[in-house]
Length: 203
Image 1 (spheres, rainbow, N blue to C red):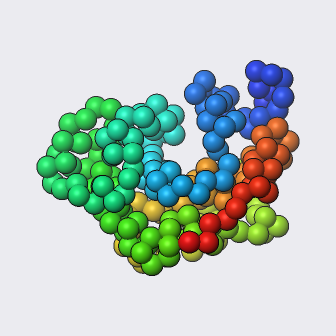
Image 2: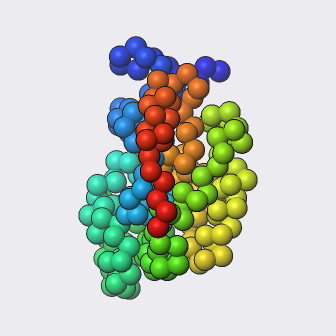
């Protein structure tokens, strides 16, 4: 099956981004572009956890409300959330009201602080795991990889929750550690160029 479809400008894009109007800007401007901001990295890992069992369209539609509800995914602030905040969030229709996922996001905020203390930053930790592009499978042919399995295992060892290998693989795709745009997608080259100019965080 062809992995691309013509976009509004006639140029080929990954087929999946045509399935909902809001996917096009996400695909063209975010997905696969490298990210070094710790709050954005934490946000994405949390939102991938919230997506488990749901569609990304559901999460994307609620993303701005998630950001307000979870104080911009500032993990230092989130560590101060307690049981009353969990109950409040369970009544918030703007997010996914799943107790386990809400509690995991708050729990993972403390784990993020620990990771920053030991590794310098979330960005430094995650980018140390960037795979050799030559080792990657054909774009969009898998939902997990040896890297996502290993990274999931390490995060779980550090106490993180809702970070299974499929969740971690989606995170790696979205945050630019893996350029999984289809080989003939016009944005693949743009993401690759962004990566070439990206300075990998060391701390």
